[in-house]
Length: 110
Image (cartoon, rainbow, N blue to C red; front, side, top):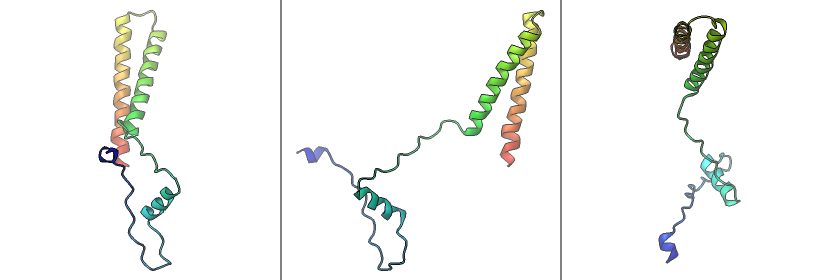
């Protein structure tokens, strides 16, 4: 009764090898032989949600934005806070635009 509900999948049998002894075995045949001796199949890599380019862009843009904001407040500490924020946001927008151009405009042509 338990066999009716629980079925175990076996790896597919490889096609029988031709009679040519000089032929190299295929990857499927080699993996099947390894599984006979207790080797586990390789784990699949989880799909990434972001590309490496997007991850690097966001990392550099975020760190650069924080650095610009801190430097603006440190250098212009005697000015109006609204003026400092306006200057910092302009610098951050320029940084993001330049980084976008480098990462997606220039690097996509390579």
